[in-house]
Image 1 (cartoon, rainbow, N blue to C red):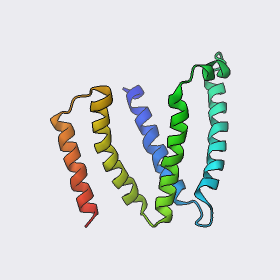
Image 2 (cartoon, rainbow, N blue to C red):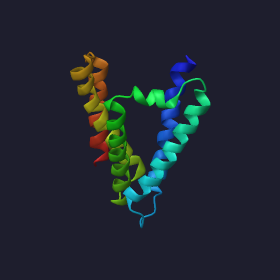
Image 3 (cartoon, helix red, strand yellow):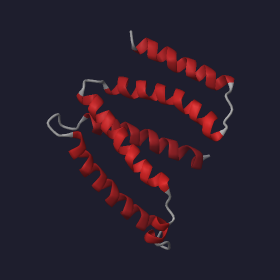
Length: 141
């Protein structure tokens, strides 16, 4: 059970800190300049974590096995993070920006799950989409 819960808890904690940090980028700093420091820090942290957690596996050998997804993920992360930083600079509130994007994301990922991964559309998922749409309508008032 713990192996099922801790990854989601890590995502929630990390996403909370992520939103706080994205909102805290100084107004005078270019978001892309800020992301260069963000990614240098992330790269260094990733190498250190890999070395600490995987002492018996060569990192270069692992890099040789990587496919297109890791490269595209890097590009997507820049878009995701730049999008949030620009949204906050444009005046979005932390609670609203994150909620709106999460609602749209939930709806889009339902379609992606069906189209790419042949996931079933269930009544629970349909109700979930309805709740997302109702939530967006309430936020928009």
